[in-house]
Amino acid sequence: MNRPPRRPDIPPRRSDNEKRRLHPEPGIVVRATARLHVVTYHGISKHKRDPTRFGLPHYSGRRGDESLCDDHANFEPDQMPGVPAMMQRGIRAGLLGHLISQGVPTMLWAVADSGWIFEARVTNIAVPDYHGYPVRPSEASAELVFRRFHVWAETDGDGADRRAAQACQALYGFRNDV
Image (cartoon, rainbow, N blue to C red):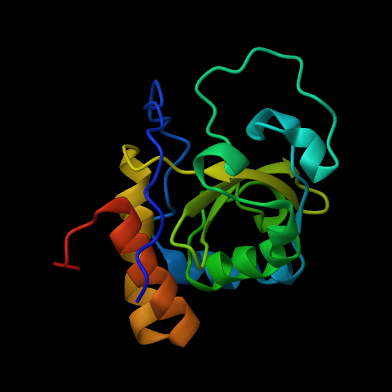
């Protein structure tokens, strides 16, 4: 297996928000979110170093500690068509946050084939539509998401899911004692 490229130094997030937690009962959440067979993703400029490459307008606001898809996780515009499938993988794995209106989770997480964990935040609950960004290795949620994903990949996932879990483990430097 090829080693993933060295991850850049991403400054740590200033806080771990309590709202950014996995739901404690993934099976119940997956059943409750049956309507999530169609989720949409729309990138936002705030999480891109060069948003024009993604067909987005320049970001003119102040960036705080936002992680950047293209700069930190090497996410490229040609990978955009694969985002819905990556989000569905996260849903099947139970990588969902707490539910809000109509059973839509406020957050969902996905593990890319490259091993990067992406966090998606609901933008519009009526659709449901999300925007996302890479999760830093220093974030408390990263290992929790990985552990849940790894268990799912080993028991219910396919070969691509297991390879994504292995890439995630190598990229983030998680121990082998899953």
